[in-house]
Image (cartoon, rainbow over all chains, first blue to last red; front, side, top):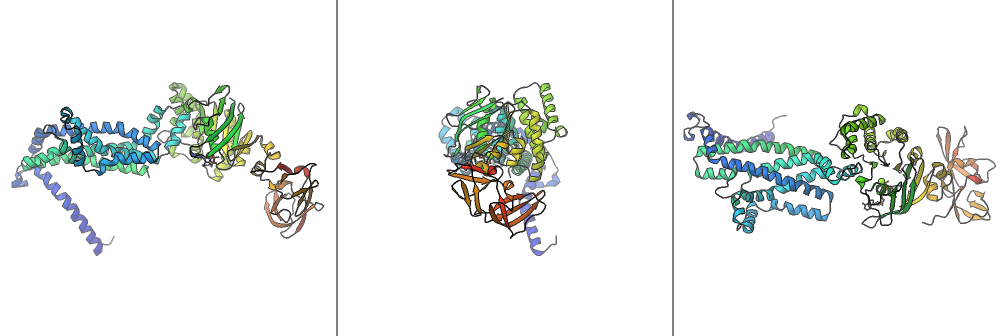
Length: 263
Length: 342
Ligand SMILES: Nc1ncnc2c1ncn2[C@@H]1O[C@H](COP(=O)(O)OP(=O)(O)OP(=O)(O)O)[C@@H](O)[C@H]1O
Ligand SMILES: [Mg+2]
C-alpha cells in the first residue's frame, strides 16, 4: 500500500479520532490508579482508590449484576417464545406486534421512565423495590432479545424441521426443546449478551427510576463524579470499564456469529 | 399396512382447491408413486396422509382398520422424507437417525442397536458421527431415509426425494433407492413429477392432474391402456393424431387410417415406436429431421398430421431430410380415447 496524500490524510483523521476517544479514557483510568492526581504519575501507583470504590459502591455493583441476571432471565422466558411465535406466524399482525414491542427503542428512556412512574409511582412497595428498575430494563432490552432470536429463526427452515420432528413422534413441547431452542442458540446467545450489556450500562431510564438506596453501576458512577474526589471517580470509571468492556466484546462476537447464520 | 383413502379433498384458506375428492388404496408392502406435473396436488395428498395438512370435511384416511383422519401427526407413526430432507443441523448423523426412537423413549441400548442396523442398511456406517452439514447430497438423502425408517413406521412417505440432487447423481441414486425401499418391505407412497422415476421405483402409479386422480395402475397398464389423453401424453409421450372420423376411418392430411368399428367422437393417439416406415403404408409424409440415438433413429415427419409426427426407426439406415416416405400404423397400436372435455 502506497502512502499517497489522501491515504495519509485518512490515516491521520482516523488516528486523531481514536486518540480523541481513547486518551481521556486512559487518562481517567490512570488517574484512578495514581496516589495523587494533582502531583501526577510521579506520586506512584496505588489500588487504594479502587478499594475505596468497592467500600462505597459495592451495593451498586452487586445490584447491577443482580439486575442484569434477572433481566436476562425475564427476557429469555418472554423473548424466546415470543420470537418463536412471531416466526411461526409470519403475517401482518406479527409485523405489527414486532413493531409494537420494539417501541421502547424509539421512545427515549426518560419518557419510558416517566410513564412507568406515572403508572406505578403510587404503589410505594413496588416503586421502592429493585423490581421496579427491573421492569424498566426488561421493557428496554426485550426487543433486542426478540429481534436477535427472530432473525436466526427466520433464516432456518423452521417449518420443515418441525414437521419432520413431528412425523418422528415429537410433541410441540419436545420440538421446541430439542429442535427450536438448540438451532436458535446463536441468536439466543447474541441476544443474551446484548441484554446483559445494555442492562449493566443503562443510565437514562435507571437514573429516573432509582432511589437513594437503589443505585446501579452507572448511576453510582454519576454520583461519584458529582460528589467524590477525582481519584475515586476515576477508579470507578476503571471498575466500570473492567465490567463492561469484556461484555461488549463478547456481544460483538456473538452478534457477528448470529448474523453470519441468518444471512 | 394397507392405506385406504376415501373422498380426500383439500381447499386451502385462500380458496385454492388443491385436491378434489379422491379415493386411493395402497396395499400391504406396496410402493405406490404419485405422479403428475408441478402443482397438481401430489404434496398436498401426501401431507394429508401424514397428518401435516387438515383435509376438508368428509375425508377419511385409514391405516388398516384404524381411522386416523383426526389423529395428530406425531401419533400416526409415519416415516416421511421431505423434499429438502430437513435434517436437524444441530445433531450428528447418528443423533438424527436416533431422534424418532429417543422421543418415543426407547431405552438407550435398544436405540443404539436399531440405529446401527439402519446405518448398515443405508450404508452410512462410516458417517455415523459426522455433522449432517458435512455430507454430500446423496448421503443426506440416505440419512433422511434412515431417520424416517428407524422408528419402524407403519408407512413411508417420500416427497420427491431425488429432486434436490443434480441430474447425473439422480439417475444413479434412483435404482439404489428402489433397491433400498424393496429391502425395507414397507408400504410406501412416493411423490415425483418424473415418469422415469415412477416407472423405476413403483409397483403401481397414480397419475394426477389439477387435483384429480386420473388413473391408478401398474406401469404397463398406464402405458398400454391409458384412460385419458392426459395419461397417454404424460406416460410415454403419446402424440395426438388430430383428424376427422368418418365411416370407420380417421382422415389425416397424410392419408386415411382404418379404425375399430363404431368409433366416433374420440381422440386418437400414437407413440413414436408404433409409427413404422413401410413402402406399402397408407400414410405419406416428408422427413424433416433425423436424429441417431444409439439403437434407433428418431425421425421427425411433416405432412402426416398438422404437427411434426415422430417415428422411432430401428433399421441400420435412415431416410434423409426432404425424402418422401410412406408410413404404417397398425390399428391395434392406436390409442383411441374419449374426448377430453376440459
Ligand atoms: N399453503 C397453501 N396455500 C394455498 N395454496 C397452496 C398451498 N400449498 C399449495 N397450494 C396450491 O395447491 C396446489 C397443489 O400444490 P402441491 O404442493 O400439492 O403441488 P405438487 O403437486 O406437490 O407440486 P410440485 O411438484 O411443484 O411440488 C398448487 O396450485 C399450489 O399453489
Ligand atoms: Mg410437491
